[in-house]
Image 1 (cartoon, rainbow, N blue to C red):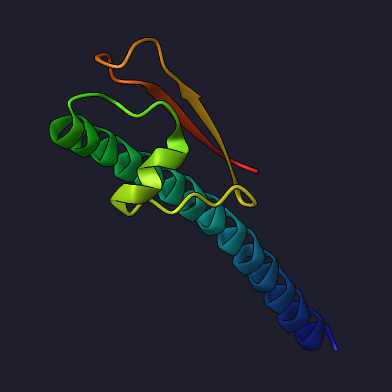
Image 2 (cartoon, rainbow, N blue to C red):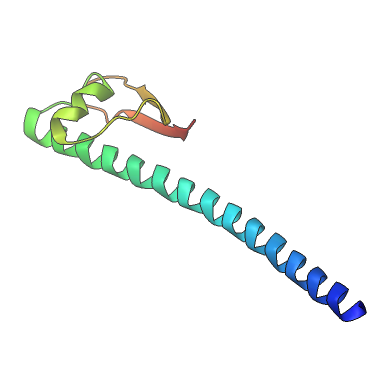
Length: 94
């Protein structure tokens, strides 16, 4: 009877660790995905400047450069000062 209890405890501890590890991996993936989106937006900003001679007035203009804006999943902050200074863009997971 004690051997069964010991085996059950080992299984429960292993399952708990597995669930914890999967949650931690999911958080890391979300952060990495957000960073990749930010990098894509930065590249599109530079491409827009190179082709048009100015940075875009809004993030929506970057759709012309292949950027997919998912406003249901992310919050985008697009701060522009003037058209010849690269805008500050922040991407936050909702």
